[in-house]
Length: 92
Picture: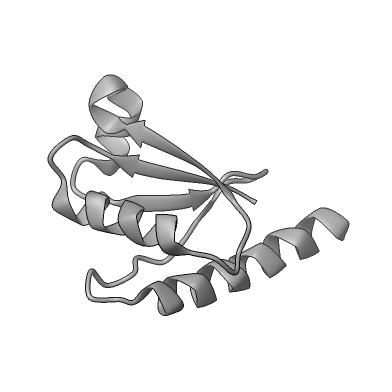
């Protein structure tokens, strides 16, 4: 599974989510971090929304926002659910 994290420099919520993603062990994924300040389209879409985590697919699927107080285990559970859904879409 390929994930995209829309972020910007100095965003503590984004940094926190990225740290939790680095601790995930039970879900395999690639992570691309996109700085919204480098692209007007990303800025317009996510200026007030970051951090935004998206499963890169066809179509891309935005994951529900995890509370900043959410645990790594909760994040893993969310990712597992979306990994299964994205595999179902590919095989169906």
